[in-house]
Image 1 (cartoon, rainbow, N blue to C red):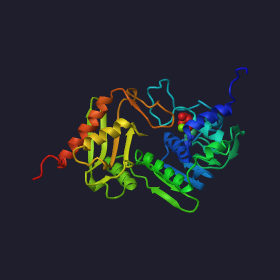
Image 2: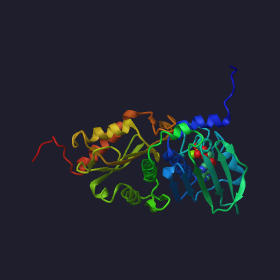
Image 3: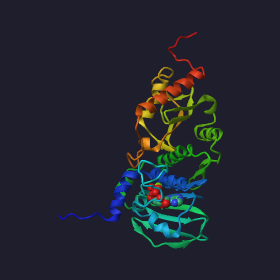
Image 4: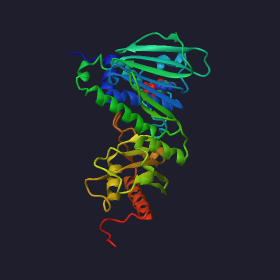
Length: 340
Ligand code: ADP
Ligand code: MG
């Protein structure tokens, strides 16, 4: 057989296979785009666990009519500077929209502040429509219908509607913790399932958002952390040992505002609590690491929230040391350090 180049649609579907595992992955990409556009309001609407419909609306910068076609083209992004090691936005690959559009029916409707009319563009299973005029306020609304209709094999792997709806709400919560000034809502066909009112970026605003997500009892059962070591800052809140969980689902970690799931961070938290928590219990934690983007690689895997630190020992030491110190300052004594 001769060697031939894959079609654009097939290339996009292959990328979608990696990045778009389930409806919640679409929601993650669209919400991140809204935040990168500076939105102060993000509204998520779903039907059928996101397989029938996902709509994410924002009041961000919008996309101009002349750039709509580029926005859905592969490897086109307004976010990448010239240096892959200096990424400050949540997105940077220019892959999400063309990937989603290759496996669904996608419509983007958008209007910039400078324009007095909106425009929209559609993609159906990879086929891009021409740009049409539309009516909308400033901002962007992305509608995704019939997710995976073009890749039926992927459809078979979906869990039930309930599980997908829960996963969507979980991903919005995870992102929302890092953006306390932004209002987030998630609604199903007939009711709002999550409503996080806008606050502010102050430490108080931060804690209010955390309590909205984690539950009102978290603030009085947690200790604030704020430490800097060699240019790496660790801030956030960690629970006292009596407020623990059977699983680690309520351990949230962020690197430069980006939600991550990282083995090193998880293991450092475990280490910090080793003396005060039984092995089968997990602390509830929200930790923000802020460091020079050049000292952390977020370009490890397109979908998995892995990161690689240039100095893992520094990050681990900072987490273990700061949490232990905070627990000690709060008068938490280790189970083994002698009963009075
Ligand atoms: P990336 O986020 O990696 O740049 P995407 O495929 O997610 O790639 O989006 C492509 C481009 O479309 C973005 O760089 C941005 O310019 C534009 N865009 C997408 N969503 C929005 C939005 N909600 N508001 C404004 N611009 C958007
Ligand atoms: Mg993006």
